[in-house]
Image (tube, rainbow, N blue to C red; front, side, top):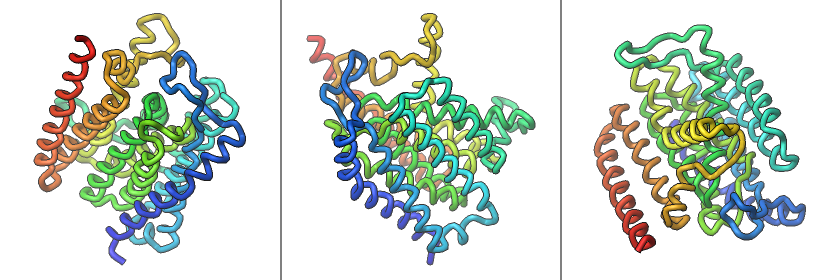
Length: 350
C-alpha cells in the first residue's frame, strides 16, 4: 500500500470516529453534569458539556492504532518507532492530565508538575530538540540544554492551545489548520511517521468543529486542549526540529506562532500588572477583538486566517512547490477578512 494512502486513512478514520462519538459523549456529559457553566470571564451564556476532548482523543488514537495494525508505521518509521510511541504515549498522558482537571479542578502547580514529568520522560524516549537557530549564527547544538528546551516547548504548547480555547471553535480550528500544515510540510521533508500523527490529529480537530463552531454544542475541555497542544509540539520536535536545516528547525515555531505569541503576550501582560501568570483573565487576542465589538465568528475567522497565513509562510520557507503561491493566497485572504473585521468595528463604533 502506498505510504501516502496511510495518511489519508488516518485522517478519515479520525474524522469518522470523532463525528460518531460526539453525540454519545455529549449525552454522557449532560447526564453526569460535566458542563462548563457561565461566569463573568466566560463568553457562553448557557451550560455546555466540557469533555468533548474525549472524542478528539478517541478518534486520533483509534486512527493511529488502526494504521499501525495495517502496517503503516512499519513502512514509514525508518527505525524511529521509539519516538513515535513516545509521542503517542505522551499525548495519552497529557489527555489524562487535562481530563483529570476537567473532572476535579486540579491546582495549576499540580498540573504543571505532571506535565513537566511526562515531557521529561518523552525526552528520554527520543522526543528531543537538539538544535536551535540563532540569528546570524546558523544552528547551534544545545547539548545538555536539550532537556529544559524540549520540556518548555512541549509543556508550553500544551498550555498555549488550552489558553486560546476561549471562543467557540478557536482552539480546534487553529489546531486543525496547524496540523494540516504540519502534515504537508513533514511529508515534503520525508518525515512520514510524523506526518501520520499530524494527519490523525488534523482529522480529530477538524471533525470536532462540526459540533464546536459557534454556537458550540460541546467544548473540548482541558483534556482535548492539552492533547492537541502536546501532540502538535511533539510532531514538530520529531518531524522538523530533528533535521539540521535552518529553515526546518524554525518551521514548528512559525506554524504555531499564533498561540505562541498570544501566550507570551498574556504572560508578559499579567506579570507587568503584578498578577500571577496562572490566573486567567481577559487579555488574550480573542478577548481584545471581542472588546472591539467584533462577533465571535468574525474573531475566530480572523484568527483562523492569521494561523493559515503563518502556516503558508512555513510552506514557502520549506520550498514546497508553489509554497509561496499559497502564501500569497493566504495573505490576500487575511487582508480580506481583516478588512471585513475593520468594517464591522467601524459600524459598531458609529
